[in-house]
Length: 389
Image (cartoon, rainbow, N blue to C red; front, side, top):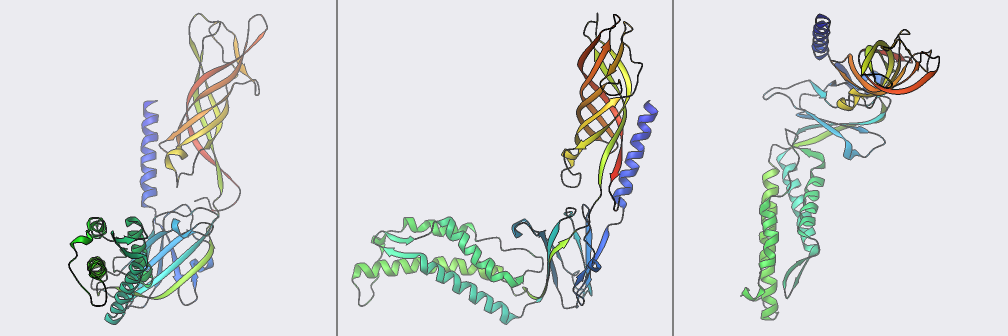
């Protein structure tokens, strides 16, 4: 028994190693014909590569994938950039998050090349203008000080969105997104609560001294706030920005259909008996049954190892110590239901309850429900047609 268990462990370890070394599928993008994977469905429930030919000016490729029926907020984004100092004529991206079988996806490709200094300068100018317009829109100057219509969190969120919207057609070489405005900006926003208009000592012709002081003092604060915002924008928008030059979108693109399978369990189990007996004893028998996993192994590994199991014991000559025959409700054999847990990929530990009956020596039959535990080997029965890889 020990040798058999050791053999099973070695076979499982070798099988896992071979699976880990198995070559991944590669999907080709044809920009000229505007086709991906030759028009065939995308691989499902496995990692895969996407590759394609590109002009040597391309410095970044971005791929976004998400289910067509869901929001793009669920998308996974992948980047490729050429090695430093090299010009490449093709890209190669690993899709690390497997796609679900028999679902439609939206796939978006974006291709970037180095932006010109004029493009970066124009982008900076546009973002700064939008930030300034936003602040002017929500700002009012009252006797108590500078008042914003939005909270500090809203101002930061809206300002971040303005920058991100401006960057819609640009990217850094590493694909990094705008990290948001820093704590320095937040502290400057919080500072306005401490402003005291009584400290203002400025005058503007044509207005009362009190009104002049409030306006100038408030404008000075707003200029300082904008200066911090603009400085952080300039810091992020360096002159190594890349500008988008082309996009390709594939809408409602299908994935391959994976065949369904049902795990078949063949094992050996024990049933404890105690009722109407002087002491607890056990009967043993091989059993066969099916397991129904609670999840997909690709997306929920732990839950996929758990299962609801059902089957029956095979021995027809089980007896207790009194010589009373142990049978059941299916083909006169005990039937079990319970939970199972898969380990080493092909072994399953089952535990639950067994419906059985005992043929008493006086000719009567006693129905009972007893716990059981068993260990089984697991094999998959494929249901339907399709690729079984």
